Each structure stands twice: as structure tokens, then as C-alpha cells.
Amino acid sequence: METGVAGFCKDLTTAETMGLPFIINLVKTASYMLTSNLDTSDGLVNGAVGILKKISYATTGQNDKRPNIAWLEFKDKSVGFKRQKVMTALLRREKVTELVPIQLEQKAIKSWPGRDLKVNF
Image (cartoon, rainbow, N blue to C red):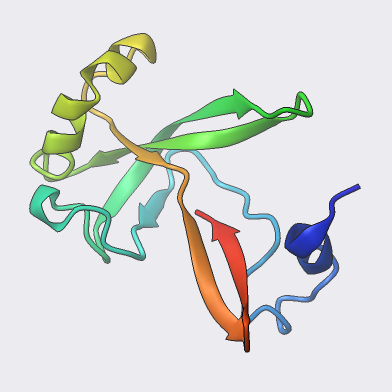
């Protein structure tokens, strides 16, 4: 059973979460747009569009497999180039060459006075 904010949000409608669904289904080969600036000097900016090619999973403490990296291919090969160079070992381990890893991020949404809602992206 989920507790805390995740357990609370699980039963909310999208109208109550301002359109943010509890579960988002991703489709490989579909285009996805970044909705925040991850690294402006690397072209990973709000509005950049890439094609989802692969999803990597991690195992949680409860033995649940959860997605932790979305691998995107950008038409402009300079987008994410710096990230690819920094994460060379990860790219080798995952057997990818031209994909850009977008890792799980947690953002706080200010919605209730004194309480933050944390959302994983």
C-alpha cells in the first residue's frame, strides 16, 4: 500500500491534479517534448523534441521495476552531445551510441500552503 503524497494522489482525478495523471504510459518511437530546461548549454531545453527509443529500469527496495532513464534520439545531433560524453560508461553499458539519457527527476509543485507535492519526471 502506498503512503504519503503518492498514496493520496493515486485516487485523485486529473481535474483535481490540474491535468497531471498518476500514471503516464510512454510509447517507444513516439515524439516527446522536454517541458523544463535540463541543460541549456547542451540544447536540452524546454521545447526540445526527441523520439523515445529505449527505457531503462531500476529495481526499488520493494523489488518493483520502475523506469529510471528514457533514451531519446534528437534530430539535431548536437542536442545532448555533452551529456553523452559525460555518461560514456552508461551508454556503453546500455549498448547505445547516439541516444541521449534523460534521467528521472523530482520536482516540487507548490500547491498547498506549507506543503509541496513532489512529482517524478
